[in-house]
Amino acid sequence: MERLTIVKVGGKVVEEKESLEQLLKSFSSIRGKKILVHGGGRAATALATRLGVETKMVEGRRITDAETLEIAVMVYAGLVNKSIVAGLQAKGCNAIGLTGADLSVIHSVKRPVKDIDYGFVGDVMGVNTSELRLLLNEEVVPVMAPITHDMKGQLLNTNADTIAAELAIAFSDIYTVNLFYCFEKKGVLLDPNDENSVIPELTYKRFKALQTEGIINEGMIPKLDNSFNAMRNGVNQILITNPEQIANARGTRLSLKDDDE
Image (cartoon, rainbow, N blue to C red; front, top):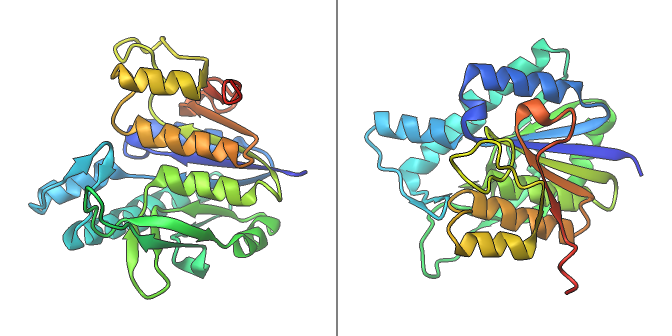
């Protein structure tokens, strides 16, 4: 099957000029069909602070009330998305910025309230691969902001790691999908204070053990949960890395080899 590369970028990478430039350079050099999914949580938090809106997080996930949703849409679908699109166009990469509402690419439902009320947060229910395939076949590169819709007119803030994983799963029966989670670190670190303590291969069992020990925490937890779920649903390869290492595919490679134990 033809290859599709999906790169999810977040953290400081999309907010700092130098790291974003490296990401755009590395991403532009990827051959074949590709999709870029981005976050921008730090920028959203910074704007919320300037506007006097409190930011609430639970295990790396943002609580999204009505005011926070407005900020998320402004930052993710506006400033961050269009800055990335403009940067890619400057490198000869014919990108188009989209949210899940555009072309009804991704629809979600508002997350049910259980122990925590996450507010206007969406859980992905479906991916419209046909519209994206039309773009990909015309050598257009979709740049996805982490905003979806409920098909009833309501926009929903949706975890960008989840969007990347759901896109990868949806396309896995059409393409050989390689998924890169790209942030400021070289991979998943065994010691948060040692940039070179990268775990080269991470199984689900070891991930859960490191989570229990508190070594893997906060935003890395949903990232890895989504990643292992994607691998179990047909995604060929998942790598967690930084912009500099995309070209040589170095970082933390996920493995399902202990799933059968």
